[in-house]
Image (tube, rainbow, N blue to C red):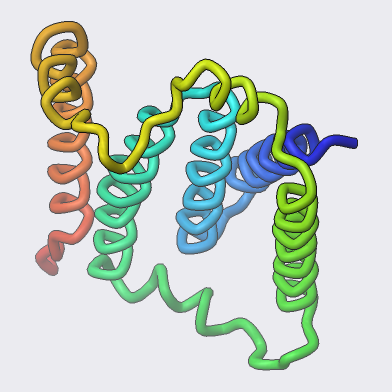
Length: 182
């Protein structure tokens, strides 16, 4: 099996399984961290769709902005939400620890396998891009072109994202607000 196909299936399985766990979990803190995994897996899938900019934007805007705001709002909210996290037994060998160790080892295995395979032979889509000379180099000046694209062709999605971030900030502020005792 080619490495790019293996990585695609790994990202897809990670996104689907984390999303299914996300909608079925009752613990808010664990749901936020599962959302973190889903967003990263989706960024990996965007890379396979050759949407590099969308993948980087996914990580910067959603993971770096919205999700961090949600985590801060969760941490600043009432302490009752944190009680169920602290009530978990502090044993090393428990089911959630073994799941996380298994997931970490599987992810490490995929990374090592991909590193070894890419050292032997580059994937076909990278070779094609090198032949067409459509690879973006670090010396290329794409900031100006990106700015023009943002303010002309992609002005509506750019504004929608800014409104979404503002709504997330307002929601985080609302969640972190202390309620008065009546």
